[in-house]
Image (tube, rainbow, N blue to C red; front, top):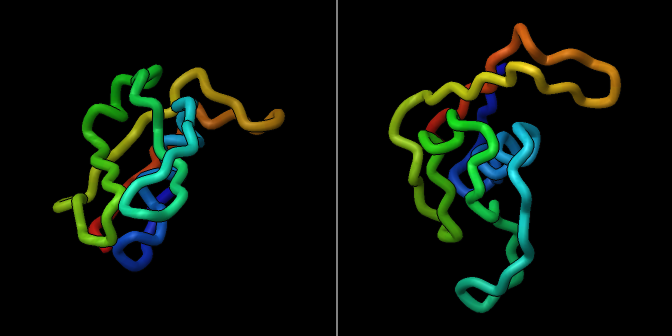
Length: 86
């Protein structure tokens, strides 16, 4: 599943959330943001760069495997989430 969108639209953050990363609410750059807690439950998330700025941090398409992950009863084992530059 390829995530596409403008820089700063939340592609990387959404992938981190769906892959099981715990999220925290924080105040960055004078605005409220939700960012990953960086526990890296999923080792593939170490390759995903999440920035609180509205400038591109993703330089190339990066994949995250969701082995053993389910959302509601939908099994995601055979899917990859693909993060893309803005």
